[in-house]
Amino acid sequence: MDDEGVELGELVMRAARTQRRRWRDVLAPWALSPHQARALRVVVLQEGVRLSDLAEALHIAPRSATEVADALQERGLVERTPDPTDRRAVLLRATADGRRVQGEVDAARRADTRELFARLSAAERAELARLLRAVAE
Amino acid sequence: MDDEGVELGELVMRAARTQRRRWRDVLAPWALSPHQARALRVVVLQEGVRLSDLAEALHIAPRSATEVADALQERGLVERTPDPTDRRAVLLRATADGRRVQGEVDAARRADTRELFARLSAAERAELARLLRAVAE
DNA sequence: TATTGTTATACTCTATAACTATA
DNA sequence: TATAGTTATAGAGTATAACAATA
Image (cartoon, rainbow over all chains, first blue to last red; front, top):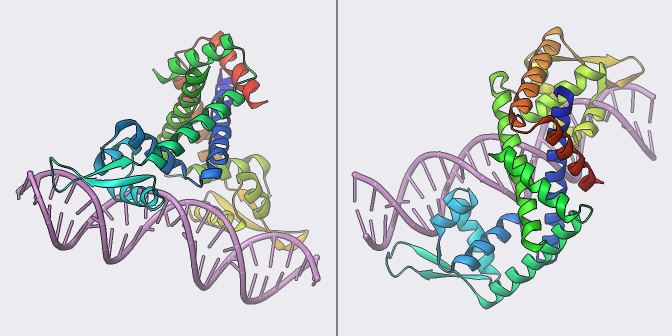
């Protein structure tokens, strides 16, 4: 499987590249970076997220979490509230605007992904998922 | 396919992430960056590559091609030779050492990719390739 | 003494613009 | 006047270390 295997690797990378590019395009109308969009999603889903937890969820340095939070707060999508159980800590909460934007972005992403995989039948999509899961262990 | 589709996208991204990480690990013994390894491959395969062509092949700015070439030259893997047909231009050529290293890296990458997809049968690998190609158009 | 979030700082990666020597 | 490669410079992105408040 020598050449075949290498080509398989390249196909996976190409598919990921395509998705990343499309994801950026999807986010463009809201002027959100991929990091910011993912952070907003975490905050909306959890309601009350410590900055340190956000950093861990996004696999970024604590310092970078501060920046992401700053950007989202500046645009009124999240707000910082004090943690009642630990006065050192800050909890991020989504604003109504933040929840609305997150909903729109999520819908756009679903539509885009649906379009990307539209060439495959439902059975083929399931098979692709199964194979990728098998590779991932 | 709403949720299923999104998950499919995540699986592709995860597979790509896994591969990128493994590729970095594979390159570690030679202390080559992914860019450098790819550039070395281009130079070895083409024998006489203009810097501008290298930049195009790697989708990087001309300035960055200079840096990659510097790094490879510093380690004796490639050398700059004047282009006989255009005295402004420089041709990159692989040294014997460069060809040897490229061969080793290539073998290591094949072995790693083989290991990564070892959980799939030959038929499953072929099917995965077919599905990914279909998505890519 | 350790931890939370922040400020200050630096490093990597890469892009743009200006420069030279050719064409 | 345009092009190839380089030098110089600057901008994102992200990391580390030091710091103040709190545990």
